[in-house]
Amino acid sequence: MNAPVRFQSLTVSDLAISAGETTIVRDVAFTLAQGRPVTLLGASGSGKSLVAHAIMGSLPTGLSARGAITLDGEDLLAGSPAQIRARWGRTIAILPQEPWLALDPTMRIAGQVGEVHQYLHGLGSADTTTRMRSDLAEVGLGDRAQAYPHELSGGMCQRAAIAVTHAAGASLLIADEPTKGLDAALRDGVVTRLRQEVEQGRLLLTITHDIAVAGALGGMVGVMHDGALVEFGPAEQVLEAPRHDYARALIAADPAKWPSFPLPAAGEAVVSARGLAKRFGERALFEGLDVSVRRGEIVAIVGPSGCGKTTVGNILLGLVAPDHGAVERAAGLAPTRFQKLYQDPPAAFAPHQTVRQSLGDLLKLHGLDWARAEASMARFGLGRELLDRRPNEVSGGELQRFAILRALLLDPVFLFADEATSRLDPVSQKDVFAILIEAVRERGLSLLMVTHETALAEMVARRILTLGSPENP
Image (cartoon, rainbow, N blue to C red; front, top):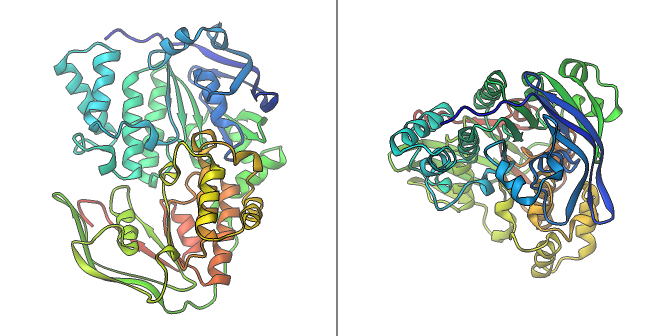
C-alpha cells in the first residue's frame, strides 16, 4: 500500500449552503492546518454536519454550496461529480453520525473493514486479514469480527464505523459525532485515536456536542448557531471564556451544572422483574438481576457499551424474552402506553416517509388532534419546515426530538429512553429533559433511561442500576 499524501491545510471561505432560494448555512470561514484540528460545536440543526458534507461533496439532493473550500489550493467545490467521488476514502473520509445507516446490515463487521483494505488499497488476502484484525482490536471489537451490525450494541456499531473509516487512511478525516453513545472509557479511547490521526499528519475536522471531547482534542473550536459560525478560536479560549451569548449558554449547559429536579414520592410499580438472566450465544450479559420502576420515578441504567443496558429495557417492554426470570407489568393498561425511544432515531422512522406522514399516521390511528402535535413541536423547538422532509433530511438531534414528541403524544405510563438525548447538544438536552421530568412529575410517568453520562444519571435519576462488562456482568 502506497503511503498517503499528507495535505497541509483546508481553508473554508464565505461558505453558504442553500435549499432552493433559502440560505440555511452562511458566513462560515475557518482554516484547518496540519497538527491543529478543528472542532465544531453547536445545537442539532445548526448546520455543523452540512458544513462537513459540503467539504466531502455529499450534500443531500436539493442543497447546494457556494463560496470556496480549498485543500492545499484545490477548490473542492469546483470539481465534477466524478472527481468528487474519486476523493471519497482516498483523500477525504467521513465518519457519519449514524452508524445504523453507515454499516451494511447484510455483511459481517470483518468483511466491512476488510473490503476497504482489499478494494481501496489493493492488498492481498493475508495482509487484508491482518490489517482488519488490527483495526478491530484497536477499537475493542477483536472478538466480534464475525458479528453482523444487528448483533452489536449502538456503541459497538459506532466503534465498527470508526474502524472502517480509519482503514481508509484518507488524509482529511471528518468525524461527525464520533463519541455519541459511548461510555467515558470508550469515548476517551476514541479521542486518543483521533489525536493519533492528527499526530500521523492527517487533517481532522470533528463535529460534536460533547464539550469534553472538544477540550480533549484541542486545536481550534468553532461554535455554530442558527446556520452561522458565531465564534471561532483556540480551544482553551472558546471553552473557558466564550464571547458570544449562545456559546456561553452552550458551555454552561453541561449536565454537571444543572439545578436539581425535585420529584414527588414514587407510587406503585408500573413494571418490575426478578431474577432476570440473558445470554447471547456464549456471552452472559447478566443474571439474577432485579429491577422495578414505579410511577413518578426515574431509574437510570449505566455501564459500558455492550453490557446489556438496552436488553434490560427491551425485556421490561416485552420486546425480548429473558432466559430466566419473570416480568410483571401493571394490569389494565394498553400496550401503547409502554413506549420506547431508540438510541438510533432512524430505526424508529420509515425512511421513505416524510416526518409529516409519520406524525399524521400516528395521530389518525389514535384519534389525536393535529394541533396537539404542533403545540408539542413548538415546545421542542421544531420548525414546521421540517415536517415535509424525510428522516435522512433532518439532523439526528431533530429526528430524536420528533421521536420523543411522538412517544409523549401517546400518554405513556412507562417510557424506556435508550440514550434518548445522546444526539442533542447540552442546551437542547437540558430543555428536553425538563419536558420529560415535567411528564414524570405531572403525569406520574415511569422513566427508565439508559445513559453513558454519569453526571446526567446522578442529576436526574432517583435510582441508578449499574451493569458490568459483558464478560463480567
